[in-house]
Image (cartoon, rainbow, N blue to C red; front, top):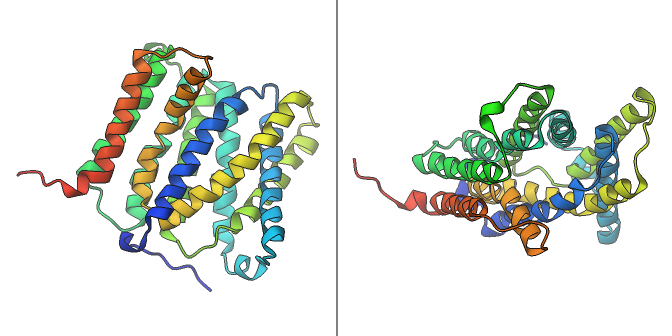
Length: 301
């Protein structure tokens, strides 16, 4: 069976959008936990995390007594390869970017992916890129810039480093994968289990045989493995959201990820509430409002 593209948003549900937004909230809550997992080689980080993700899917198949093989055989090889690049490659380059470039600069580049998701999903669904898409994405990106400026980002001292390149790759791979998920809603989310498993084998093999298995702190490995359970569920929700929800709106919601992370840290007493954070939240929420209601507004010529 070949995958067919679906271009109509009319069949896409609010449940799908809620699933994508739920993924954003999960990622924002787990991000500060994962950030504390220091001293883990990127290949081991991704290999371990994706390995746990594969086990999560296997556990769900067993609990539901579901045999996914028939539907997995209908997924074309190119989509599996794209998934490995989009998930495994995104995670790998994300870790590499933060390790090989100033973290704030790398984060700014990486978080262009929500804007790329808005643009690419609009194109992949055969829709026109409307003014409110651009405004919503611009407000969201402005919110990210404001947040990072509050954390000490100095744009004037920017010097190109390898980590910046990995940050670009991280943003692009995830946006392309998301756009393909939106274009082919008939593909089953169960194929994510295969992607996680393949990514774990590839990255784990590179860490073990290519790099000689550099060790990592046990505490960090426990953090990565534990957080991977929630990350795997979030990936499934994101995939469902791209396929069945309003992909562009979910993309704009994604700008909330680092903002919500900062808010959680404030609530836990680890960080202080600053005007930058408040302004950042206002900008991103404004972008979400424009993305949701922009189509209903009629601009005068």
